[in-house]
Image 1: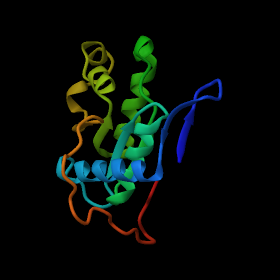
Image 2 (image 1 turned 120 degrees about the horizontal axis):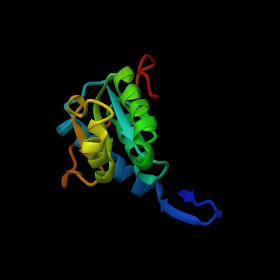
Image 3 (image 1 turned 60 degrees about the vertical axis):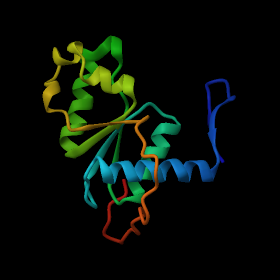
Image 4 (image 1 turned 180 degrees about the vertical axis):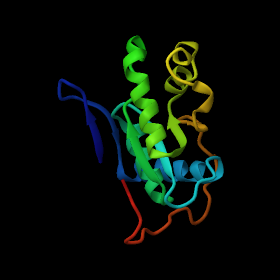
Length: 149
């Protein structure tokens, strides 16, 4: 069981191992179908700490791509936080960004365009966009040379 606690120590989100596996598997399928990624490619995961980040992280590992975890920019302080997000995406050479709809909307907003070049973001994949069917054989066994994180 994966359990996320809030600042008071109470459970705010939880997933069983099986639920985590199934969501990660669907994310892996999405990365292969829509992301058109190859083993070793980098994927920017722009999420706050939580279940979506964990599932996306494992989904990346399932297909042999390298997850690059990035804290989302702070909306009231885009001037200071968005350039850092952009720099990490660029330096990591991430081929795809995976995040939630509100964060993707923020990254492509008019306010963001005043801070960074929003037209050159890599393709984005929304958290809520998951394939309905499971592709057979999604998992790619890692090799000793493969970078995981």
